[in-house]
Image (tube, rainbow, N blue to C red; front, side, top):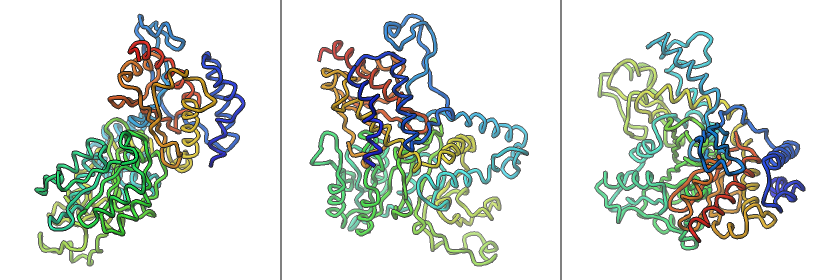
Amino acid sequence: MSEILKSPIQSPLLRGFVTSRRCDASEIEDLGSNVTKGLRVAGGRRVLRSHFFSYCLTYPAVNVAATTETGSGDGATEKCVYLCGNSLGLQPKRTQTRVNQYLSTWGTQGVQGHFKPLEESPLPTWLDADDRAAQLIAPIVGASKAEVAVMQTLTANLHLLMSAFYKPDINGKHKIILESKAFPSDHFAVETQLRHHNLDPATSMITLTSPSSPEDNILTTAEILSAITTHAATTALILLPGIQYYTGQLLDIPTITAHARTHSVFLIWDLAHAVGNAPLHLHDWGVDAAAWCSYKYLNGGPGCIGGLFVHERNSAVPPPVGELEVQQKEGEWEREGYANRLAGWWGNDKRTRFAMVNRFRPVPGAAGFQLSNPSILDITSLTASLEVFAEAGGVGALRGKSLRLTAFLEELLVGEGSSIVGVEERALFRVITPSDPGQRGAQLSLMLRGGLLEAVMRELEKRAVIVDERKPDVIRVAPAPLYNSFEDCVRFVVAFGEALAVARKEVAV
């Protein structure tokens, strides 16, 4: 692995380039192109940029960007360096095709679209659309199709999972553990779940802070395991991120999961920043349950439908006894034998889903946690992107490219041999993401000196560079292997160095 990661950084072309901070557009293009070609020879994966629309900015006729090397300033549209897939992934070109096919089905079939596919359309019936999406997402999270469901949104799915598996006992296990700097929605979900059970978050919520890294809160595996051991006797549930949204840290999911299970503590993973980013093996790791969104690395589109995983041991449903169960009167059948949950008709057995009887028997597996019929528009959009993942060989195949991209980006920013970012500018930021490639995904989080963020983001946008900001002082940069290139990394670092130089003078730091 180390040799693979070194390959772009040790190239003679890069060594010659990074010693000179100034460069023109052709030099940047040559560097990115040649490094990319070299990595293909070394076994790297081909960029699939052609499968995606490129994000563009349109500059007004009068714009400060006209004075920069990259800005047009004449009202022209310029393609961006888009390193923001950790916030919203780019749109796959086939999404428009698939959505139009869905609209054709709706327009010509009406309600029959639930059961009757449009002739010559590759789309499944609406009744089976979620099954098709589950089939495509299962290998991305390392699960069987029965263990995943495409449904709802991330926080809604977290609430549904907690409603099923958080069973507090005030005299025993009632606490929930989460990190102190969890994404606010996760914090809100935990706090309101506690209040829903008439528990006080002040005494029933444990927030983890790293004693070794209190400012950045890079929690070590040992610190997490120690906290679980300490509070195991009173803890009913743990909620942790697969990848921490702010720092980009990838947690040791299998080790932490195994430790929680030895203490009989149910653990839910928030995989918002991990799904489609890092290889996952949820079934083999013995993960209890997990939830995710699909608009970041999965490229499903803004606010697109989410998903959840429930391990087969937690979602089993006893087989029905012939036809007797179907013939029983409403309310007379035995409900034991499966995990209780907040239920809805789309989670009901397909054989009786449209029979309009008030006897809920869940679909075996995660699909039994579904509530209402899902948005077919959302599922169609997501499925289009999942098809691209499948053609690329899946997340495992893309991981090597991702490791190279992020290592390349890191070397350009802070490597000893790189001077693209000037000495004075280097003192204005630091990388808070772990330097160990095994402890991160695609994202690098850059902590700026206080007061610089607004000016730096403004200057980056002038240079047609789009990244994510997290106030007060962090820029998150995420080269996505499906559509980003080494040239994108170079262009960002050049623009970032220039933006820091402008901000330094403006803020007078």
